Image 1 (tube, one colour):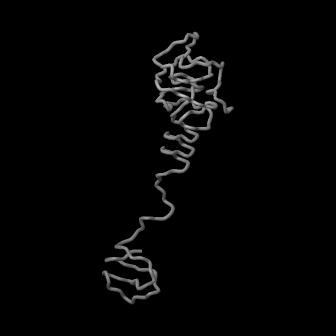
Image 2 (cartoon, rainbow, N blue to C red):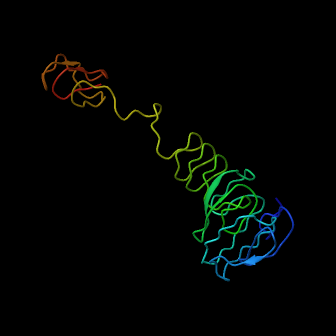
Image 3 (cartoon, rainbow, N blue to C red):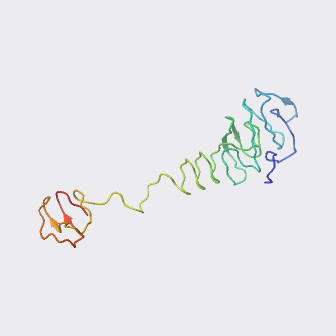
Length: 191
């Protein structure tokens, strides 16, 4: 991937402004406006259904998508939504915004790289169901336990006058100021 302004060069370089060239080389405008800038230098897409109306400027370096910045080459099957609301099911290459089998993805379900909103299994997901990376919302069983197993109430572990064995509330046997362990079964007391 050379960092240039050519959108994923693979195949013969053709400079087309929102004109999807089908196999015979005919310039067919299918519902797209001229304000679209999709300079794709990949080969001639066979079946490109483009539905973009807003101006797109997709700078992809080599098979990498626009919105989902993943650095793992070209992904095979991806449902992409670019910044201009493009929705293309592409398999490789760089399409303008089409259901073609060559094109860069904007919003993909990728399994590598760092997607913004995707179901990824590696990388650092921003909002995703990930199985690796840095999870924001995770059920962890290590760290500081917020929920400890206490049988009743809450007694701080302080050395100032905490009861050693209290059976009911404030009744204490031998209030030792140096004890840290308070075994309580009722009232306000816990470990």
